[in-house]
Image (cartoon, rainbow, N blue to C red; front, side, top):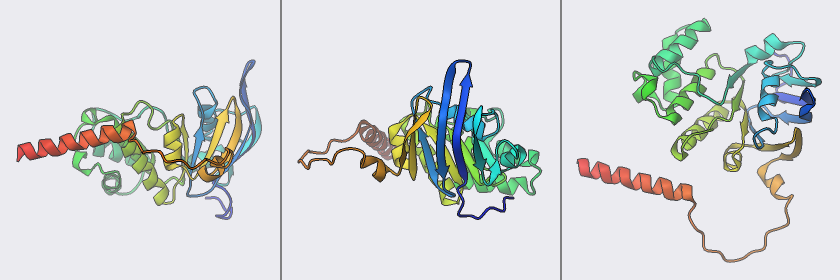
Length: 264
C-alpha cells in the first residue's frame, strides 16, 4: 500500500504524450483526481480518452510525461499500480453461460480471496442483482450486464476504478441503472475516473469534468466553474418542456403500472 498522505490526489497526470507515427493522440495532458471523487474525462471519439486510461492502467506506455495512481508511478511501479486499480472497458466482460453469482464467485476465487460466496452476495446486493443472482447472464438486460461487470471489477476493493465509456450503447433505463451504480462506488470511497462522450452523463455524475479535445485538456473544473466560462444567462420566462428521456421514462412507468393493474 502507498505511504503517501490521503490528501494527495488518487491520480496525478503531468505532460502525458502519445503518438502513433505522425498521429499525435495525446499532446501534453495534465490533471489531478481527488480521492473518493468522480472525475469525468469528456470528449468526442478519437479525442484520446481511451488512450489516457490505457496508459494509466499500465496497458500502454506513454512517449513522455509522468503519472501516478494511488501514490505509485505508472512507469517505475506498474505492479503496484495494477494492484490498486480495476478497469472496466466499453464492453461487458462477463461469462454469459454462468449465472451472475457464479461470475462473481469465479473472480473472487481467481483473486484467492476468502469466502468468495459472501463477497458475491454482498456485491449482488449492492448492485441490486440479488433477484437475478441464479439466472444465466445471457438473460440479463444491457444495464444488468454492465452493473455486473462493474461489480466484478470491484472484487478485491481496488481504491481506484477506471470506467471507459460505461454506458456506450445502452438504452435510457440501463444508463440510469449504471449511473446509480457509479454513485454507489463513490459513496463507498472509491475513486472513479470515467470517460464519456455524453454531456449529460458527465453533468449527472462528475465532481469535476475535464474536456479532452484533440489530445489536450482544454477545460477542467466543476460544473459550476465550467458554466462561468460562458456569459451570464439572461432571465426570461420560458415554459419548461419535458426532455425526451423524461417522456420515455414516464411512458414506460405508466405502462408498467397499467400492466400491474391488469394482472391483479
